[in-house]
Amino acid sequence: MSAPVSESSTAPLAILQQVFGYPAFRGAQEAIVEHVQSGGDALVLMPTGGGKSLCYQIPAIARHRGGCGVAIVVSPLIALMHDQVGALEEAGVHAAFLNSTLGFEAVQRIEREMMSGRLVLLYAAPERLTTPRMLAQLDSLSERGLLSLFAIDEAHCVSQWGHDFREDYLGLNVLHERYPAVPRIALTATADTHTRADIIERLALHDARLFISSFDRPNIRYRVVEKDEPRKQLLRFIGDEHEGEAGIVYCQTRKKVDETAAWLAEERITALPYHAGLDAGVRQQHQNRFLRDEAVVMVATIAFGMGIDKPDVRFVAHLDLPKNIEGYYQETGRAGRDGEPADAWMAYGLADVVNQRRMIDESPAGDEFKRLQRGKLDALLALAEAHDCRRVRLLGYFGEASGPCGNCDNCLTPPEVWDATDAARKLLSCIYRFAHASHGPRHFGAGHLIDVLRGKTTDKVAQYGHERLSTYGVGADLAEMQWRGVLRQLVALGQVVSEGEYNTLALTDSARAVLKGEVQMLLRVPSAAPKRGRVAKSASRAAKPASSAPADLDSAAQARYESLRAWRSEVAREHNLPSYIVFSNAALAEMARRAPGSLAELGEVSGVGEKKLEAYGQEILRVLQAG
Image 1 (cartoon, one colour):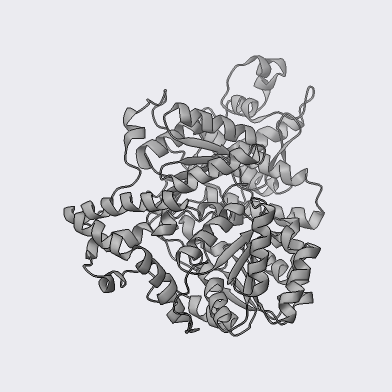
Image 2: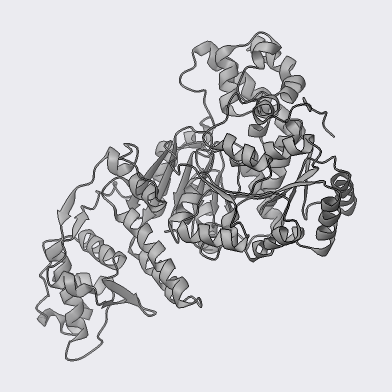
């Protein structure tokens, strides 16, 4: 068990400074901490990287020092439990987890620590928390006044309207029923109005105080590109902007994850696959490499990432369209947790729209659920098709007003737009004429539609006599990519639907207004595609350093910074922890910049708490002097 650290004080600010080494709270943290410490329930919406964990860790420490016993943290991921417990123990806070990685003797030892009241925080998955054995132990703790609080992390998992519904979370309403006097704090990075209401209802948080922080992540640059050989587009993005840096690439299917990871590895990028179809041991091995190494690209389904605490993820890329803005925001939020510049990059095309609409339509869910999911998808499509500030639209979805950010693709390079009203009418008219032709099939796909509009002579055009249609050749003035952009927008807006096994096209009722010219269609001019051809492999790609010193350090400070990073890597390996848990890059940079000459001066660096100062202070001073 770790040595106690200044256990006399229960003041939140004192704990923040002594244990975690931060000089002041950020945003709503202090109000949340004081509310929960005093026994109140809370629902906290705070963006990834905003410091959610401190909102329950500090009240847990304070209430433990006041004799209230152990805090129970509901966490959905084993990796997150390991990292959080490792970080707390490094800071001198006695914490533990109960999960499937532990043997029988380890479980018994931790349970004894919990039941004695010596443990400050215990992390457990929701399925373990609701077992008869665990509930009996919680009953005993409650009867003895040794149950200090419940923290429910990733609380959106409880909601059927959320993007990552987990049934195990539904049993957590038992906490309110059995332990009404124990304060509860539920936390998530994303929740729209429906999801918030569902969390409150399902967790019985009707009397909880709601804390909503700004959803803005100003260090993240949002970018959406039109799909045109998306693998090569991704490779150019990584090679040009994030060579040798950590990132996540999201794909919709397991097969695509495996293929994309293998292809990136062939292109000399350290890439690993992650999805539920892999062996559990392989998944754990890949996740550990991603967390502990500094230049791994994880290619994954959305099964990966929730609760991932790695601060130096420099980019998140989507090769497929997410289901909704909550999912997109949650996934992109895994980039740049350290506050340094990061990228959210997405490739988007017509097939993405068609596939997402089909998944909703073919879902066995009820009509109300489908209606809401269509609305969520429409909001995401509007974000993808936007030619104004993406951040304004993203924040507006969560009810937050803002002005143009100056740091998204549309702000940095405003797209050209063109009046596509006539083109849209021609396209819709052609689909209408397919459906009312005198013979042959009534519905056709995108390729044939565009061939007819452009007046191309193909076997299929001749077979069905479509060269005789009045719309044949009326769009010869537009390139194929322009027509695909018009069609994608019409599908995104719901005026055209793609049906059946062969993705044939049909009109909806809302197409009538466009056909009549009552709706103006202002569309983006398709961006010029980069020169095609094989992307050359770069021998320097793998050789580039995974991280370089911050640009604002002078040459001497940069040398100290690199020395500190090398020392930190050694300590992390010895303790079997990710490097960022020992000290963050920001803390190392501040040490290198200040070059403190005494323990007292080192203790003034943000992120250096009392336990870490005691454990590592002399070594850090030695490294700084040598560096």
